[in-house]
Image (cartoon, rainbow, N blue to C red; front, side, top):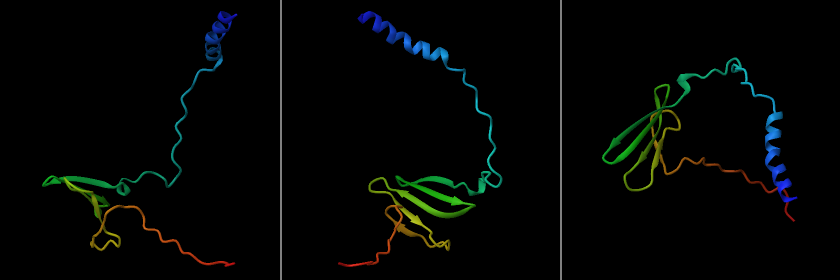
Length: 108
């Protein structure tokens, strides 16, 4: 009885595989109009080395908007141009600073 169950368990996947239809490749679907990838909007990253530090410069359309500096010893930090005026501010991480407004609706 055990051998019959074992044989049935081994042959079951073969019968399921034989019944499945052959797979066909999916047809190419073009992107919607106006959604084509623009090479100018892709960030251009330049990586340089200076005195055991790694400097990554991020540009879009040739404009420098962020620099990531990874020193040989210590944590990496970022210089970010928020307004686009060339003035960089230092950030230790790039997590968004979100201040949620809090209102008291009702007190008991």
